[in-house]
Image 1 (cartoon, rainbow, N blue to C red):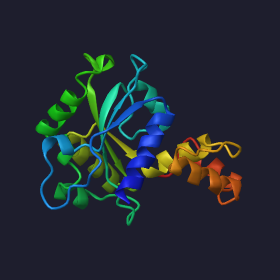
Image 2 (cartoon, rainbow, N blue to C red):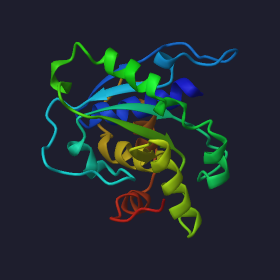
Image 3 (spheres, one colour):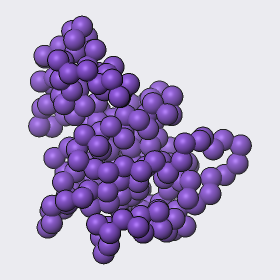
Length: 203
């Protein structure tokens, strides 16, 4: 499943104009990850919008303001939102370690568009709490741990479902082809798309 989730996130960034490098093709299970294995994806925007400041919780409209980022994908789909308790365990945050960030920068060293640009640290997760005080506590814990932005799977799916076209065959992408078929066979209704496209989608 991790491969599918990584593919989903990759398609999202590529659909929004980013170049994406997958840090590794294998899964690390029986040992602690090395620094260069912490981030799942490295993304670069060839034409970032200068002067704009993306919000902590990213939406698709924030992406043009990002220059480059290391992305960690936490596909814990058994929950709709992480909790402060889950954050405090630390399992989410290994990719923000100094060694992991330096390894990501080295991986980007040959890509001149990133020169002089900050490397953002993005955590992709099911969601963050919508109710207070859990929401504020979660954001504070993530910020203090070094996470620059969070991106939810809901935002990713919303954008991809809207972007795929029913009359196009996405033969080179299983992920996009699946989303297209959901639209072709009316598994995703217009009302759902309107909900996804609301200016303040649920967290």
